[in-house]
Image (cartoon, rainbow, N blue to C red):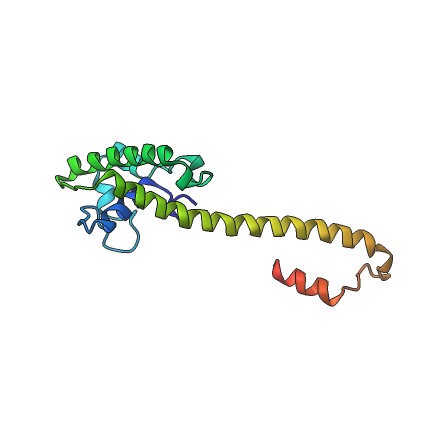
Length: 161
């Protein structure tokens, strides 16, 4: 999920460079940033770039945690400097730009997390409701073991196929 949701340092670096209109030496030939030039970096640098952002990144409120965001921005700047040294590129990106890029990633990452959380909670609630309905309708079983289902239950079940 980290790479799918762009919750790694490579995505944050790309966002910061784009926000500052800086040409990216690792710019991929395709839409997949994990293919191409990034794989030509030394293994330790590449590994640091594709590391996930800190686990608690989506748990904080970024506007209430400026020190936390600045700490991640400093880590990102360090990793970007390693890339600059390895590629011979010189990128001038301010700490504020790194923080802005991280805030953008935090915003959409939080939105995705909320959608997934709601989806899983709905599935758990549906499971509980099914168990309760099974207990309440056990007496409706036909001789062949089938249960007559209400239209409401059929509609709900179709959502979780």
